[in-house]
Amino acid sequence: MHPCRLVRLLIRLTFGVAVFTAPSASGKPSAAPRPNIIVILADDMGFSDLGCYGGEIRTPNLDRLAKGGLRFTQFYNATRCCPTRASLLTGLYPHQAGIGHMMEDRGVAGYRGSLNRDCVTIAEALRPAGYRSYVVGKWHVTPGHTSKALEDTRNWPLQRGFDRFYGTIHGAGSFWDPSSLVRDNRLITVANDPEYRSKPFYYTDAIADHAVRFVRDHARAHPGEPFFLYTAFTAAHWPMHAKEADIARYRGCYRGGYAATRAARWAKQKRLGLVDATWQPTPPVGDWSAVKDREFEERCMEVYAAMVDCMDQGVGRLVAELKAQRQFDNTVILFLQDNGGCAETVGRGKNAIVRADRPTLPPMAPDDQQFDSQPRQTRDGWPVRQGYGVLPGGPDTYIAYGREWANVSNTPFREYKHWTHEGGISSPLIAHWPAGIARSRRNRLEPEPAHLIDLMATCVDLAGADYPQTRDGRKIKPMEGVSLRPLFQGTAIARPQPIFWEHEGNRAVRVGKWKLVGKDNRPWELYDMERDRTEHHDLAASHPAKVQELAARWDAYAARADVLPLGVWRGKISPR
Image 1 (cartoon, one colour):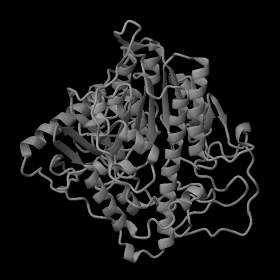
Image 2 (cartoon, one colour; image 1 turned 90 degrees about the vertical axis):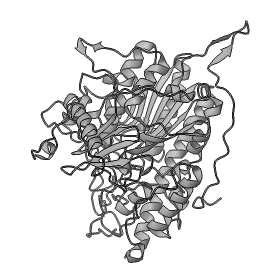
Image 3 (cartoon, helix red, strand yellow; image 1 turned 90 degrees about the horizontal axis):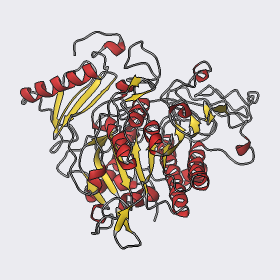
Image 4 (cartoon, one colour; image 1 turned 180 degrees about the vertical axis):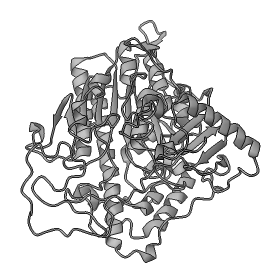
């Protein structure tokens, strides 16, 4: 079937019981071995991009994991790349881990721009329980954008509990020639890496290949020992880079434009039961009839889709390796995304650079690309082009897909990456574990609200580990989240605290069906998430007591979690 056609409805759920134990020689059940744990994180993708969440993009491997496990419909991230990674790795809110904004040091505890020592990573928490840990892909919880920053390796993965690392320290860069590329503790480049001298390099493939390698090497060197693998893809973060073979699969898919694509996704989401049909989806952004260069706009989304498709292929290779090692059934796989669709307009300005007939710059030296996340040229001397009308995809381009397509990615929600409205913080979460998710729960939708802070608690629970109270003589902040494991069996979880957010002055709190949310230095808005998760009808004026109650709880969170008073992060002073 052509990838642009709507996929068929998911197969009806089946019934059965979970297999947590295996029969022993006596016929009595015995405890199953502790599971391997794999967390897969995608970058800058919207709620509706995956096929199993309403999209037309081909994601058969993730769709199969969803069919064999649970799909969460109200899972939340921390609005942006590095705060999400800090929260995921530590089980704390980003400010508590020292990364309340980005990688700059603002001189206060919550905004140091690098993981602090008052937290532990999942790898550090699981190591005493006998787990070996590996990470591939984007790290982005310590500075890595300059040569000086890369001299400080104290918060690189191997210094934070992981046994192997292949990936980038910085948060963005070329998929054909990424900067701040590291193998274990050694800074490398594609040009000086012997592995890629005889074969093409594309970062998404390299991430998947090393994830597969780490699983294979672990099975050979440490048979019988459980592992934790954190696989942090950079797809589909700008720049829009993809292989032509993958782009070709989507040629012509987006000729209908923004509104038509969004309407198809909304219709599919309703059929899949992911949304309430009574909700009013936020309106499409952009007038397709007024687009001056449709070839360019279509190409942006074609490349974006190809990036997601390639990532899914990599997930398929990882699953195949788990099956080859007979580890698939007892491996917990969690897939999620770091924020909503990205409306940033990188490289979409008016001054387009036209491609020359031949390279116009001297070839780069092997190490020239170590530090520049946005290179001025390709390694063989082609100028890197930006501007409206430059067709993205190749290594000589550096362009984002734009606000209009981000609105499509976030169907049916409001706003984007950076904001704490649903379009900025809503993420798919697929949980797959054949040995631990009840058969009656497979291919089911899980509506329980959950957050990144819950992943540390879940991993500690699954591993039978003890979360430390101290480390190296320092007191460790307690976990903020709760284990999601009971949901695998259909048992409710008890969350003692609301869920909170703050980023760039955008803030929110979620308690039950109520969500209080506000933009930087703007009044609070109140929404009923059961009736109006698309945030159309602000109830703040009609429920002032609820606003006051939730605002007070957010204030208490901000005070204890190292969140600066609103406006301070921009240099403005205003009361909370």
